[in-house]
Amino acid sequence: MTNVETLLRVRPYPHMRVESDPANQAHWMYMHSQLAAGDRPCFRPGLMDDMWSFLNSITLREHQREPGRLRHVVVASDADAFNLGGDLALFAQLIRAGDREHLLSYARKCIDGVHHIHTGLGGDVRMIALLQGDALGGGFELALACQTIVAEEGVQMGLPEVLFGLFPGMGAYSFLSKRVAPQLAERIILEGNLFTSEDMHAMGVVDILVPKGQGEAAVEELIRRQQRAPHAHIALNAVRGISQPVGYDELMGITEVWVDTALALGERSLRTMDRIVKAQTRRSYAAHPGAVAL
Image (cartoon, rainbow, N blue to C red; front, side, top):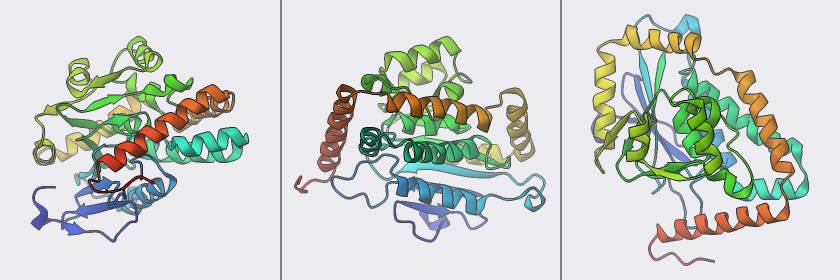
């Protein structure tokens, strides 16, 4: 965030950093902080533990919420990518082992988080995804779960899981179908193409498109604007839940289909996952000049 002097650093987390304003009305959650060379900016279990732990810590029960007090959480990244999606190395390991229990546990953890985000942490929070780097697979699903997507120009996003015979099972179809026609959502998923932020803005998926380097300022302005009408934005959270619901049971049903589909993949698909993991690792080293790949 640009106005760093107005922020308070929240207790450290191993895989992300959080900064909050003194009134605890805006929290900026930066994934992949202190990412080492070779570490992939994806949904490793430790990152999810940090994210969901923090979000649960600021979630208020209904009797704790003050009328008209609107809060914001911004999901951003310290890495060159927003998030590259699920932990493919872990997926390949669990699929080869036929370990349905742990694959489903990982998927359930994802669903717990994105559903909580989609509900606005119970209703008094507007979730904003700030995309300054690529958002692929589960990383794109995370952005889609938020109420507002702000993206800088030149960012790539998409759902490439079909490349290894799978589909995005952590909410993509449900969330994307609220922003575009279901037929278009299905085509995006099945074709597996990547799109620029400009493309996604033209489709209506990205809400706010800004030039490179202006994302944080745009989010700050958005928060200021929404805070001028807090009751309306809190009410719209409730209206969205009534008119455009994405229920937990729906998401879990889809992710169980995802788990069973994943476990049916053959070695050819798993080798494709392995190649993508290697490419992501090379990308990580490239983002750390001077680091030597092992």
